Structures are given as C-alpha cells and as structure tokens.
Length: 244
Image (cartoon, rainbow, N blue to C red; front, side, top):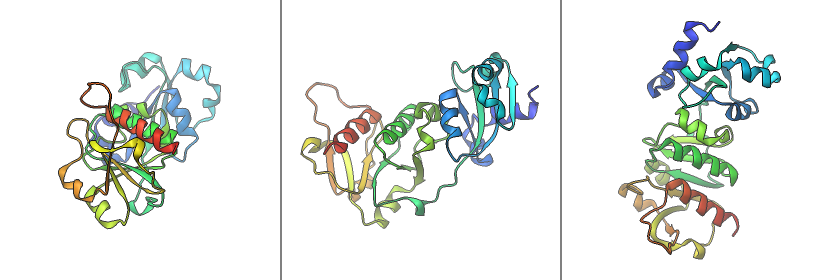
C-alpha cells in the first residue's frame, strides 16, 4: 500500500517552489527511468504499476519501490497518459565553476516552453554538447514536461542557471548570437570553443546581452515563415556546425 506521505510528496513536486525547497523532482515513464538508473542521480523512491513491474522484472531489486495499479499512477502523474511509473529523485547541485568553457556550449535566454527546453537538451546530447547555460528566467529544468521531452538526456547534459551578463562579462570567450540578420550559417567558420546564444521563442535575445555578442549567425530562409521554433534552430545550427 502506498503511504499518504509519499502521495503528498509526489503531488507537491508538481510545483516549482516545492521542487526548490525539497531539492527533489519527478521522473516519469520507463524510458526516462532507465536512463536515470544508468546515471549518478540518487533516487528517493519509485511508485510503479503492477503491469510495468511484471514486464520489467529487473526493477524488483530496486530499493524503496511501491507497487500500485496503473490507474493510481495515472492519477498521480503530471503527464496525460502515464500508467507505468513515477520516481522521486534528488537534484544535482551544479556550480558555475564546473562549466567547461574550453568546449562549445549553448546558452538560452528566456526560453519559456518546457517542451522546447527538453528537446534542446536532447539535441545537445545528440551532438555531444555537455553543458547548457540558461538565464534565470528560463523554464525550470526539473519541470516534468522538460524531463519527459528530454527523453533521458537530462542525465548526460548539465544545465546551469546563471546571470548571463555576468557569465559573458567574466569570461574571455567568443559569444555567437543567433538572429535572422546574421552571417549565413553556411559561411560561418566554426570555432573550437565558444557560446552559441539562443533567444526566447517570442522576443529573441534580450537587448542587454547584445553588447557581449562577437558574431551574429542566421539560418537563411527561402520560404515565407516569419521564424523558427528555438529547438528547431538549435538542431539545424548544431547539425551544420558538427559537419564543418
């Protein structure tokens, strides 16, 4: 039987302030959970459906496992159709000093859509980008939709939340901005290191950050669309740069 105290923990972690106060977050679904098990994240406890456990017998050896019906999982879940499992996990305490500025990095300014952030993390993982630096008003990494959209890639990509002006002003590093008016990506010489900065879905890069940008690049269009989704832009740019 699932204790009421565990139910309260899961329900509380649907809210950002409780994730901050408890230093815990939720991981839902088999794919993300399997990636979690291969990582160095610490699991507090896991609630799993009888059907999922029957089909994944290797989970039986896990500690702090609570077995319930699939209907109970679905009722507790943040997602629309999760009938497998929910795990309560400890956050990582990442420090700015651990950012490796000798590699190519991504920075995100005011990205608000959780699906976009999760997809960007997944794309970064695909192209072996190890760190993403987010403005402090970018959507929370530990939002359940971000975790779900990353498909487990959150376990391999470190996401930092920092004051971007402070990061850019205190580092002797090339900052590459993205806009519709920059150098054609096809004409851009790829640096060995630097930060590629992407702006918000609606407003682009904040004016206060423009003075730190050394080079502007763009994805040239041949059609009539006004803009690209930020995660699509990240994918196109990283794909192009990875084959230079």
